[in-house]
Length: 436
Ligand SMILES: [Zn+2]
Image (cartoon, rainbow, N blue to C red; front, side, top):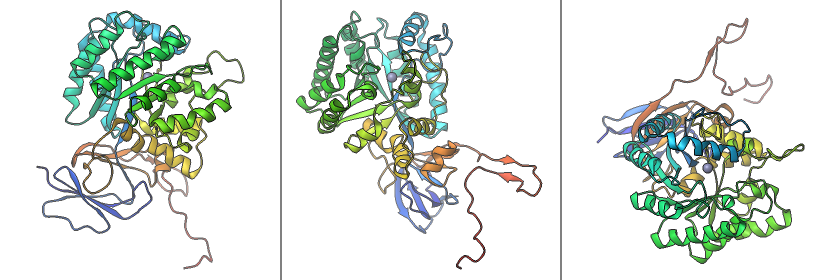
C-alpha cells in the first residue's frame, strides 16, 4: 500500500476554502479543515488552489485519434467528407498503429488530469481491427485510466452490410456500450428502426447505450425522440446517452418545447461536443451561419444531465485538440453563451461530474469514501480554471501521483513591474481609506 497522502489548504469546486484531503488505501479517508497528518504521510501544500475530481471525457474516438493527414486532409471540413476519409484510411490501418496512437493519446489525457474516457470504436470492418486494438489498449491503461468502449457502426447499422453482426461480435469480445448513428441510415424510417434494434439489443444484454444522434443541421432529424421513447419503453433510463443532438439547434422551437420534457422523463443523458460541432455544423449555410451545437442551457434547465465531449483530436474530422477538457469546457461556454456565474460552473461540471454520471463511474467525487482520484489545478476557482486552461499541477489516482506539471509563469522585464507573472488573479491591495 502507498503511504498516506495529505493535501493541505485546497479550494474545492463548490467554493469551500482551506480544505485538507487525506488519501489512504486508495480512498479519500477524510476531507475538512486542519486534518492531522498520519505517521509517514506525504504532505503537499495546495496553497489555496483548486482541487477537483478528475476530468472525464464522455465522447471520444480513440481509434481515429492522432491520424490527421492519413491518407490526406479533409478539404471541405464537413462531417460527411470526414466519414469518407476515414473509410479510405480504414484498409490501411494496422492493429499496432492504432494501439500506439491510442496509448500516446492516453498519456496526454492523464497528464491533463483526465482519468476516465468513453471512446467509440468503429465496428464496420470485417477484421474488427480497431476493436481488437482498443480492447488491448483498455487492458494496458487500466492501472491508470478507465476506458469504456462503445460499439459504433460508423457506416450505419442497416446501411452497412453485416454491421449488426459485427457490432454483436464486438460486444462478445468485451466492448462495453451499444452505439448507433440513426441520422446516417438511408431513411428516417431506417434510422428509427436502428434505434429500436439497438435499444432492444442493449436491454437484452444489460448494457448501456450511447448513440451519435441527429448530428446534422436538418431540423427534421428527430431520432432523439425515438431514442427517448425506447429508453422509456425498455426501462433503460439512466444508462442511455444521446450524443451530439445538433439538429436540436435548428429545430422548431415549439417542437423542442415538447421534446425536452420527453428526454428528461426518459432519463436520457445528453452529450454536446463543442469543439467539433462549432467547426462541422453550418457548413452548408451562407450567412447567417448556425452554430449547430445542441441547446445545452435549455436541456439543463429541463433537468437533463448534459456532459461535454472532446470527440476528436487530430483526425479526419478535426485537425486540432490536445486532450484538454478545459478547452472543451471553454468552447462549450462560448458557443452556448454560458457566461453567467452559474453557467461557467455548469461548464466545469459538464467535463467532470456530469460526464462521470454518464459513464456510471463508481466512487467518483471529492467525498470521504470516494476513490482518491483528483487533480490540483493552478487556479482559484472552476471559472479561472476554464479561463486559463489551468496547469494540472498534480494528477492523483487511488492516492498515487500519476503526473506533475510545473506552474505556468513568465519572467517579465518591465520597468516598475513584478519580475514574474503567472496569469492567476492576484488580490488587489486594499483601497486607501477602506475598512480594516
Ligand atoms: Zn463522435
